[in-house]
Image (cartoon, rainbow, N blue to C red; front, top):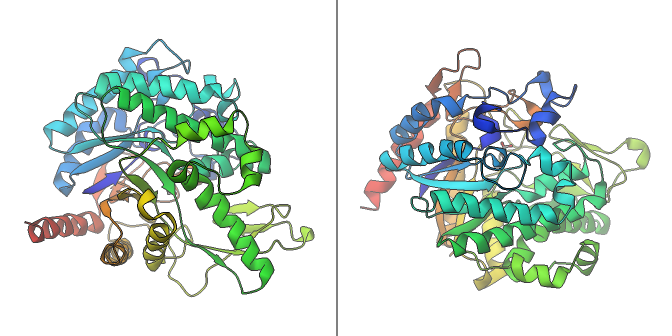
Length: 442
Ligand code: IFM
């Protein structure tokens, strides 16, 4: 399955249309100094009004599937019932348009934009949010379930936990360090409850989109290897193992979680039809430096010295405009490691995100990136990993969170002054690759 991905907060704009209320990101972006260059998502790509043009771009690209997310506050402006039908109408129209263009709609229910009304009551630090999320999943499935058969519950709970609640670099801007762990548990619980809600509405293709990457030790020294193991625990195993194995990878982590954890894990481990992996890069990890260093800087984010690891630059690789190293073979390594780690507990895999930021419409560097990663994916498949789909991040240049509009991940260029869309060279390259691949497969 070939697809592309986007998310509501990053492309839609129209923050007050049809009864929508603010999300955590609307409020966070309005605070001085939070977003590079002072950008905010209030217009973004204006996809809310231009979705027909964007669906035509999808059809022209020839993808079979489109992964988008719903803005929870369009559906539940107060974070709870009753449903705001005019808000849900937008997704009804979008799904109709996709079906008419023969593009399979693949909605993600939650991609970081928590309703402000829920954040004010504790957000993902409190258990109630998981139950509110399940009620929202039920409402969406009731309306769209006649045309949608493939669902994603949540996107990258690791990033929301680490960047949003741990380090305060993303909304909701809390700097709780390890006290952020309950946010991970409640997102995972919300995921499990949403799987139950979707299945009760007849859904039969459900997955999660977790971000994963190999973690490499900066050296063979025991302290570096221990730090890399800890980072692997926090980025990969903390989010994969509850879902795939029904347990936390480490008793210390389980003990840090609130509520009836053993009972919750049974819900979190509801069997999935497939497992979504978002892959961008490996991480090179070392022991923490001296506190006087003030921590390590990584992709624009400062890892405080009090955390038990430091992140290092991977040298000798091409870099994206974001400064991220380009390491396609990390995708092969990651997928084969997951297969070895989880065996038959790992369902078929979809790559739910992979992509890069580069400037320009003549974007040969993006073509090289995609080409390299598709070859790496192919090698994982040859090694026996059951991969069913590949979704490029992203269809459009868009609001890249704390980076504002500085990082362009799109196959389609967006002129933010005029909102004109211009397909880049990579769009045409991918269209041809999809065509050739479909012919090869008959
Ligand atoms: O833009 C983000 C997306 O929202 C989540 N995954 C990573 C992308 C690039 O940073």
